[in-house]
Amino acid sequence: MPHKDDNVEFIPSRYPPFPDGLKTTHLETISLAKIQIGDGAEQDRMFEACKTWGFFYLHLLDSDQGRMLYEGSENIARASEHVFALPLEEKAKYPPHKNDTFGYKAIGESRVDKNKKADTVEFFNISKDDMTVPDSEMKREWPKEVLDNKPLLATYIRTAHSVGLQILDVLGTKLGIDDLEEIHQRHKIGETSADVVRMTRGLPRARQLETDDDDKAEIITTGAHTDFGTVTILRNWLGGLQLYAVPNRIAGNLDFGDESGEWMFVEPQQDCAIVNLGDAAVRMSNGVLCSGRHRVITAPGEQGKLPRYSVVYFVRPNNECRVKALRGSGVPNMADDENDEDCIRGSRDNDKN
Ligand SMILES: O=C(O)CCC(=O)C(=O)O
Ligand SMILES: [Fe+2]
View 1 (tube, rainbow, N blue to C red):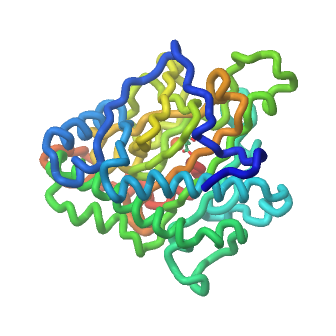
View 2: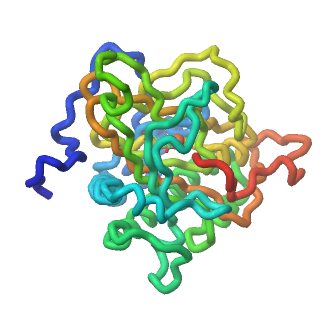
């Protein structure tokens, strides 16, 4: 779509490049097409990436579903610009309900560090369940700017969910899971879940600082976290995402007291999504798979002068499911893995990530 209007913010083709010379992770790039045709070497590389960092780049342009995610995420980011441009009073009409995270999170509602500094990003979390049913069956209200894009969002949700499950099928096979169907049962598209498409818009650096004189200031936009679901498929176009250089194998390890590692940038790759595993994948594999701790800071260099958009799909277990370890030759037994106390519930209501 041509951009007639210079007020348009989301124009990836005009973004300055990611700067050289920063500490950056070297993640594997996995081809979605090769995963889809069952290429053994590609599957091995993906499994290794999921055991080491729980993060990899997914090359999208060589498969139909990948191209849908590529174009769909750009269209959703464009739509999100209209959502975020609404007056705050209007956006505030869509807060999360008591037991969910759907709807609008304003800037400053979360804390990003131990000094309780406020975050500088707004989110709009759009639920899978409402976008994939007729309007009359939706459980909550959505702004017109979201509803106008319901067909796009529904297609994106179905595609991202399907790609997430294709990834889980490969990981399940590599883990020697006895019953792969169990993974599908836990992530049924038609069952109620906390799956969302998250639209995000992070403030540019100039708007975060009182003055714009400290070009190098590191401002945390979204604080350190692990995602609580199973698989996350992320599209971002500006830098700022960082991965903590100590792999995390503990589900829900949100007590980030240790500061021994360092933060490394994950450079966005034009033709790729960034895929990462969440706590439910750690739990289902009894810690064989890894859920990488990450955060977002202001995009580096010139990029940081621009508002930062991202589009995130979270594949999460169905609400009713108890996320126990799966049984399989590659999943170590844990003495207490039958213990419900030790299970993550499908809906981790209080978590925002
Ligand atoms: O915007 C990004 O690059 C990452 C966002 C993220 O980690 C999240 O929303 O959980
Ligand atoms: Fe995240």
